Amino acid sequence: MQSHAGDATPSGAASGPSGLVELPYSTRFFAGNTIAGTVVPAYTVPASYVAVIRDIEVLNSSASTDTLFIAAVVPGPLTLTLTKFLSLAGETPAQWRGRAVMNAGDELELFSVAEAWEVIISGYLLGA
Image 1 (cartoon, rainbow, N blue to C red):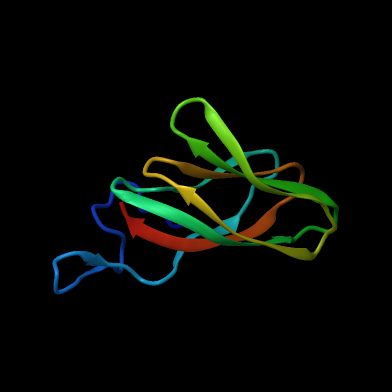
Image 2 (image 1 turned 90 degrees about the vertical axis):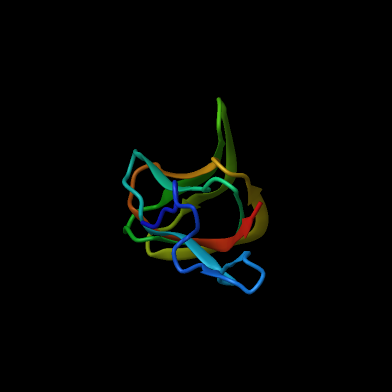
């Protein structure tokens, strides 16, 4: 699991001629597995950055049908379901593509109902 929470600049960032941070074109925010019945914190947007979630790749790696929820958690009591993969058969991959903007301090969380899933989440990390 990759997290940049608390970093002044994300790992791999370099300073450009103007002194501004030049970031890689795409960033992997999470690559890992869920734990059945447990909320998995996947990524927290670092201070002074905005994340744009562009692509989510999932695989229900079990033999059973299951549901996966991916949520954007805004500081405070607000949790928004970014996407969900409902009743996906075992050993089945799926994909979400979009442009969900997350501000500094926002978190991504994963929750699978009964099985473990393999998940990769990527997009852009931009200076705010």
